[in-house]
Length: 297
Length: 282
Image (cartoon, rainbow over the protein chains, first blue to last red):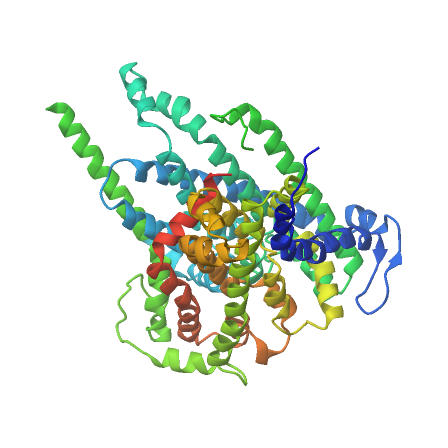
């Protein structure tokens, strides 16, 4: 048993703001949303216990539940790999000894600073209008005008392009990771006559895998919660094709004030994110490589 | 000789690709700036970024807004919300990180693991009870839902970032201060914080930009137009403006991006360092 000195307890004093914040603004809401999810609760009344009815309603009756559920899955599957692939490819090019790396890095990073702001969503809406500037650009190559935001088949893709455009922060993380790979590994591989592809798959990818893992987890969690883009660009349309899960939660909570039902929805989302994260974690042991054998994780 | 040629050609192609891609990346941003100076009928006419005739009344009229309140009001509101949030986040996160990084108190491992786990806790799962809680506190339609949680180090990302930074600092200076009879708070104030300035700047920049761009939370918590932030004001104007006044919307879009752009270009170094340290040393 470890003995603590008086001096050690001072540490608790320093972290006390976080303890209060954690209990009040993280743990308490977390538990309450679980409890509310079993109740019928409009914000004016008091919560009335209703068993599993919210969950049953979501899975069996609410058509928008499955629509938004699959839209969101599709959105995640489209944005995360595209974003990470762009980030990795561009980071690898920038990692070659070329001049002006800083300028390119700055330019590629620039769109990321606007995050999920209304401004970039407004911008997207104008760029991809039927007679907007993207179609004008395509017409140079004799490609007919595409209804980017009006067609239910491609509207979600158009919205997800906004997230892909903001690959900058993943790129910077990759770039920092690439810098850490010792050059000797590549030199040794060159001596052994390893091809470019071989060097990528046998050195770069394994050495970069912890960083890739981190990016994958964080981007996936974020993508599942996307809200501003589809809300501002398409308002969920056309024909609910860009209606994402977080919009379903928002509508139920703040349009219809069904606090119990939307809590249940948020728990379904939370569990879904957990399951996906756990899958990434579990499979990661087979594809991530840690120099210290994973001690630091 | 042949080899040298091959390398040169591939370098040239790399540069062409990088430049073309850079143009593609910034074109939307350049376009919105140029469109804000174009007459309405010209905006969608061509890809050309140079306006045939420069107009500035888009900015003047856009700034006036569509209702009772001008964008000046929305800007002021956003600053009233963002500045305290940033200051409180920086102070609280630094103090808490100092506690985690420099002391060995009971349950430290558990508490630290809890802090890290909230890093991955999706905000949406706590959104509704938090709204109900803030409603009970009477905080709705004010900036308190942003400012007060910031005081309590509720952004685990920044606490984590500071802990990582503190762990990388040499401890000798702090140890010699102990010998000189300084208490831990004096050490934090006089020695640790001055050494943390780069990390503190990164933190302030990120929190500024994230709070500035925040839409969902402002949408939920702020109801009266007199308290609208720039995000809410911009959204209101795209809904309200008749379809003809495109350049006014473009102008206000540009204006709303401006603070982030200014900060980005004046503090680029801290951006990259901030992302790299938090992203990597996990």
